[in-house]
Length: 320
Image 1 (cartoon, rainbow, N blue to C red):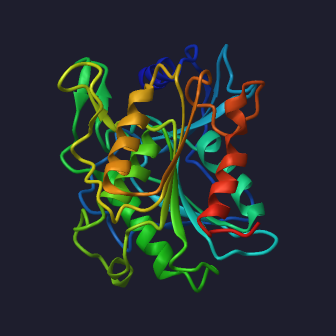
Image 2: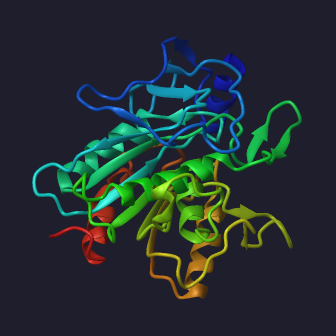
């Protein structure tokens, strides 16, 4: 586990973490996790150990604060954050990042929900299966590897369908359900938007009769979207992403100095969306790096939530 934490820190551009160990992740007070699946999850594999939630301290905090790292998730859950103030009916499934080795559960999870719910948006925070649940970097072999089954993607699709199935119970409009993802979670947001039929797993219950296509998607410093083929600089989209005109409207934010998921990730996906005639708004910043979440710093990129709010208004998901 320590090796995984160190690898994550290196990927995020942070110093080696000094973890403070904790038990399985728990949502904020007053909120309840619900099981994502009605029984055993499809393609279930044992986790390397029990689920753990770690407060990571390092020489380089994110905006001066530590962040929470959750891994060894074998029982995925959904935590619903109800809309505050005037409920717009819009809802967003939140996919934290972590290279499919763990989840940055506060930086790219609960903090996202705290931003969206005052805008009248219901948030459903997904704790999806990790580690090695999608295309991931194998430290021992020094190369990327694919798992036998894309269990993180299965969890992502199920979360959208379950939210739509329970829309009336949770005060959600079934045609206003979107996704937002960060880093590896940005890939899940893109993949759910581009690859929703056929479903990646056999239907488990009535919830899986609902569509798993999101109505909009938001990608923040996304990864896994680009493949360096046909020349190192060629903008070759990951073949796992089947962008079509049915891919929903998309919002993208990335920094040009991102050394973890370079700007080619966003550019390749942007070009594919434009070629398919999909409405897309992209914001590139000269500086910002990776894994900044919503935490404010002096860098202009940390003001991206204002742009995202305006975009949500523009596409008719929330009021002005």
